[in-house]
Image (cartoon, rainbow, N blue to C red; front, side, top):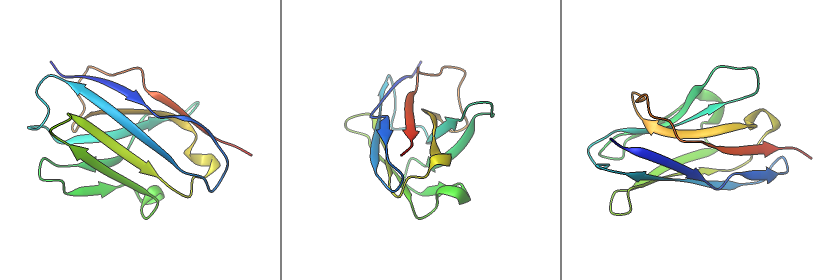
Length: 113
């Protein structure tokens, strides 16, 4: 089974940038992957997806600001987040797409002045 360890979160001012990383164990390259987030009091949502051939898609609220990428040799998925807004504050997770039942601990992103 593939497991995930997310990192790179933190506190950033509005307009700032962060780069999240997700290290996967187990077989990785055969799976489509995604970044998800869960804001306080809200359901978890998919924000960025990447196929095995690195085709990408994004939820409308992050299009033009976030970029998902993958490095199969390192079994790692990245999320470059630019022009961050307070509404991007959430715990960010990576998982397969569609998601498996195995979730990592996530990494907290807080966007605040």
